[in-house]
Length: 220
Ligand SMILES: CC(C)(COP(=O)(O)OP(=O)(O)OC[C@H]1O[C@@H](n2cnc3c(N)ncnc32)[C@H](O)[C@@H]1OP(=O)(O)O)[C@@H](O)C(=O)NCCC(=O)NCCS
Image (cartoon, rainbow, N blue to C red; front, side, top):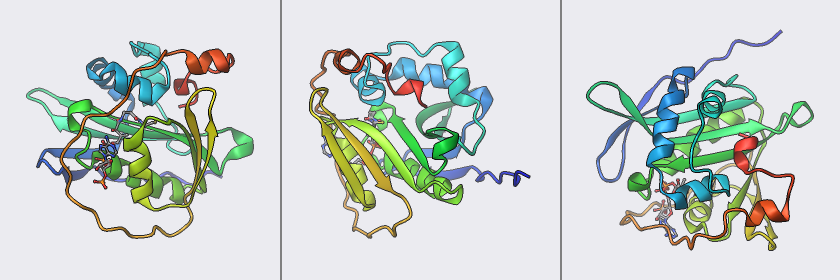
């Protein structure tokens, strides 16, 4: 028998620049908000998230991203109030590899560009990791561009054991992060927001090298 899922309550957080946001589990009615976030992202951020150009998030795809079982697929969103509603500023998600791999999940995360470097990615990853652990997930995997210093820096700061393998043909680190280990605490320091240093590459370099792959959206 399945144990009922207990979802975390919405949580109010303040970023380094004092922006007030709410972090909560994603809901099916977030699909249009995910599309709106995607439309505001720069091509660089979309590329780093999907390892593909992926200019539009289609309605059916957004619906699939928003309608999760909260066990094998989970996502947290960070939202900001607007006059009439709320908008999604960031989303972190995981999806397990399949019934044979219930202890391993691929993660993905994206933060709206103007909010990057304010600590939100770290806040979302911490919550995703904690939720994943409580659902028996022991490892996160990801494919991260070698140019994605911000993501690699964030992971280093989380202090979890990390195996990485370079897929040199496509310029991607294949990462495997052990979630069970205790985090090595590291002092945080205030930072000035910096722009991502991505040199946009051919969107399909990865997919040409791996014709079976269509970007991470397929998995998340
Ligand atoms: C990667 C990403 C999720 C990080 O989120 P974020 O909110 O910007 O991250 P944080 O502010 O929590 O932390 C980023 C860290 O990188 C550091 N950093 C910022 N810009 C940097 C840069 N250009 N180079 C190296 N480190 C950088 C920050 O100082 C911070 O470290 P700190 O916590 O020690 O101060 C976000 O930048 C993003 O959405 N990028 C585009 C999509 C993407 O790359 N997704 C990841 C692959 S799935």
